Figure 1 (cartoon, rainbow, N blue to C red):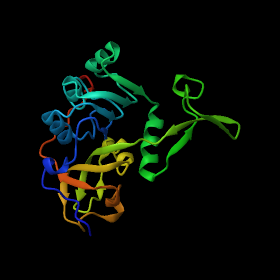
Figure 2 (cartoon, rainbow, N blue to C red; figure 1 turned 90 degrees about the vertical axis):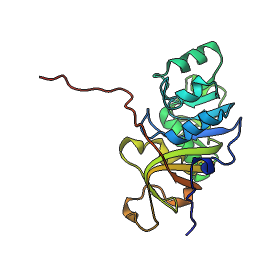
Figure 3 (spheres, helix red, strand yellow; figure 1 turned 90 degrees about the horizontal axis):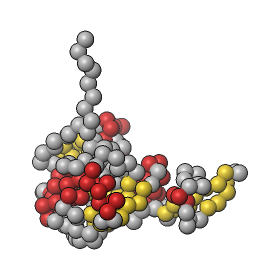
Figure 4 (cartoon, rainbow, N blue to C red; figure 1 turned 30 degrees about the vertical axis):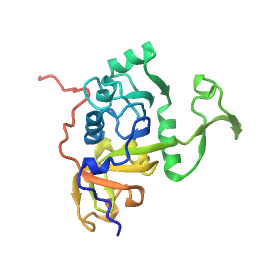
Amino acid sequence: MINKKVANITEALLGVEDNMTFMFGGFGLSGIPENAIAELVKRNIKGLTCISNNAGVDDFGLGLLLHQKQIKKMVSSYVGENDEFERQMLSGELDVELIPQGTLAERCRAAQAGFPAIYTPAGYGTEVAEGKETREFDGKMHVLEYAFKADFAFIKAWKGDAAGNLIFKGTARNFNPNMCGAAKVTVVEVEELVPVGELDPNQIHIPGIFVQRIFKGETYEKRIEQLTVRQRV
């Protein structure tokens, strides 16, 4: 069994350089790779193209990279919670590619599976399809979308083992599974790292074949993006 475990975040990010393309798992602030983001901020890696469903919030998640002007392009689906993102986009400081959420997920999964492209009906007849190849299938028009090409995928899982087998919890099981194996190098941080053999094979969501490096994260804030509670009666 190949051991994918690395000692720390420093070893996990070996090979990370300026002007690379990164994938970041997460949905809102749920399941984001907090330790990897913090290390990228610390290293001041710049010129990044970031593929992520969202851009975090102003002072957390990918918003930390945006504040330091480390991101040159965002490839995202939902970006409505980040004022700094909006400012940089409207001022022309940030290149933005907005993608339908399902298409974003499938372009990740296509890269994971080794498919060069997919056809999807989403976006046909809109600005999303401008300049792209279209084709009819069973009387319905589809748009050709290419699989993503990324240098690193940064993933957050609840539990994993030294072979890279992963279990996700709750909403964190969102874009994380689709991004595993979708880049040249997949780096996973977990809350709990166990020896090989401790995970129930029937509970594993992603097998270790899709993972190159895994480490136990040091701390997780797990911030709630929008706290909604009932009023006391």
